[in-house]
Image 1 (cartoon, rainbow, N blue to C red):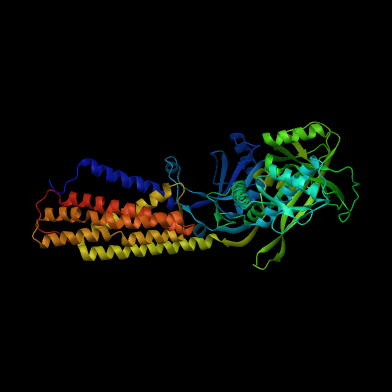
Image 2 (image 1 turned 90 degrees about the vertical axis):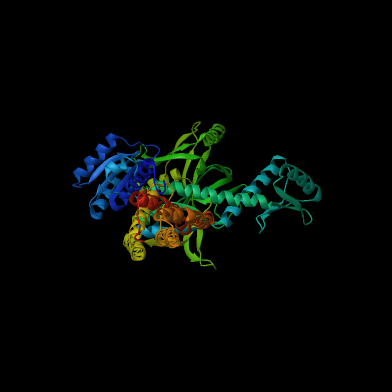
Length: 615
């Protein structure tokens, strides 16, 4: 029989709509001002920690709307921003370095919806407010450091082979030039270095010299490694801030975009993200008197660094260990009640430290703190110029064999120790980065964007409904029902997808989808009217209206879907947001316009003798 659906199809459609409605509902409840407390690697969250926090909030007359332990983090919700900020200060002082206390915006979704995994849509920076950073990696520093390491390796190998050289200097193209006293020694060095360094181009240069340059593919690999590692470290640092749904992604050759939606403590975020702190452990050169000044003649394998008080320390250039091997860093006080940072190393770092200390008991080891800071000046491209600052923060005698666990002392105060430990836990950046663009979007502007987007959706919906009802009457009302169901499904699916983030362009995609969603119904209804004019019965006209236009509707929507997929694949940021909502809207509009309206029409007219349609 024409125009009849089996019962299972109606059940499927009803369940689909209920499913979409349930997962769209959390978006109407908004967000609570909250504080999120997470433990570092040295601390775990438990019910006892929860009771401990509740106790201190009560003692300070701070009332929370709720406080709970969820997925290994404690979340406390508050009724106003003043109470939230007071609670943040109290908990920061009480909990100390073993916990991360972050200002937060938490969804106010009811528990019965949260139990089924229903969450509100993730809002982008332009809708939720927050902070946006565009950072550029200082590749000159990366390649210069690689150049210095390569040169030190070459010189060490020459010394190991008892091949003497007269002088050495760096070339402008990140290469090295080494000169010798005569051609025979030069040729001996050249023969050995060429055989042991396939990744370098080593040639004769001048009368008694050689030049060594890293191959282009090796430099490219170093460039890519620096970018990828910095992205990974920045993600770790963002996690330390406790920000939900952050965006950290590459832009171009050597730039990284960091967006932190919903972040309130922007100064703290900037301090942590842009800090380029590194530790180097080096052996102190006891053969040179420690009062040697920076301009004095120092051996090629050593250099002078200074403590915070300006005292010179002569260090070997060879780095024993870097902060890259640090797996955890916590703060405590030593027996003299002075702050110290307790370091845990990975297996490789522990092995290197073990081998070194075993063979150097009685010698001095120094901890060199390296940081790149903004000089306040800008280059010709108006980008900030970074200045490298190095400081010896600790010199200690190796008294015993140590490996994975040890402590750094000599730090000025507990705040500085906490800051250093946080940076070390998150990881040291492979290369210094500079913020070339910074923009903060307040929650008020975000709410304004949401309001304007909703108004645009509403007017687009009203315009489509008025057109369909005036032009197609009862069938227009059926199409309107499908249009509303379409909007509910789009919101439900967007809320369900873990990687989907709604932005202003995403709202534009929804508005566009709603505006053109009735196209399929217009094609179907016009075909029905045409079939009626050709003398078909009502049942035949309805059947031909859906059957005859199906391929055209699918072809048109598939073309749009392919375009959306291409936009998502090759676009970035807001373009992807537009592509996601457009693709979801295309799929749901086809479902509601073809199956949804057909089900309602079959229910109202299917199998009945009808002489005239309200179309």
